[in-house]
Amino acid sequence: MIIILIFFLVLISTVILIILINDFNVKGFYAREFKHKKILFIYPHPDDETLASGGLISALPKNNFFVISVTKGEKGNEKFKLSPKDLGKLRENEFRRAMARLGVKNFEIWDFSDGGINTQSHELFNKISDFIVKNKIDTVATFERTGIYGHQDHVALSKMVNDLNTVSKLFSTLPLKIEKLYNIQGRIKNLDLVKNSNNEPPEFKIFTGFSIIKRYYALKSYRSQHLGHRLPLLLKLILMPFEYYTTNWKKEDVKNI
Image 1: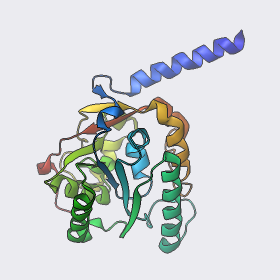
Image 2 (image 1 turned 90 degrees about the horizontal axis):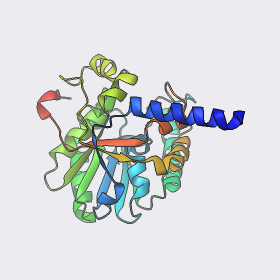
Image 3 (image 1 turned 180 degrees about the vertical axis):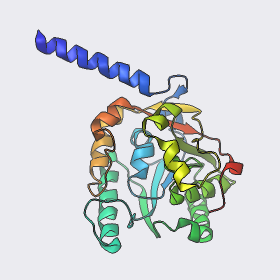
Image 4 (image 1 turned 60 degrees about the vertical axis):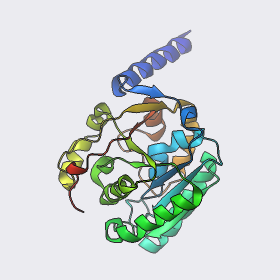
């Protein structure tokens, strides 16, 4: 009897926290509404794709989308204090393992410089454009204009995607409640990359609760990275079972980078 009572108390507490943390005023979409799209998920570093879009990725038909990491993440914030060369090799292997755990068939990891995407913008933009044409992509997904927390690679890649003229765009973002939980606005102000420190508000959210276990083990593939932050990783995924997206991008708010 006591065990049952504890179970229901934990369940009720979890539901309350989910309601408090997430924004239920944002309209909900189902992943299946994107199943006929040919989507390119392109993110700057290994693990970005799973953190931002892992739920949508795991729910789509496996032959209908591509996942690309633009860099190997060789300068990432990691646990093992490896050289950039060794860390790049490790993160490339972690990326491949994460893709296998998400069931992704079509993926690539490119060799642009971690921390230097803005210095290679012309070459990268052309490569993305060629990939889109070659693979008949109609939608591209990446971070919103502030890069969630202001990383210059996130911001630079977001700007490139927004500049593409032949495709629809999906920008991964967060509601204000989650921004406040992680003090994201303060972190963006410190990096001084955008005039308006607020992330682009979400237009819609996608329930990803059915993929929590897949996303958890995919993220656990990135053993070199600190992904728990303030909450243990599994608890974080349970309490935030939505991915938030927008199609908006306010060019005037982003400074030259």
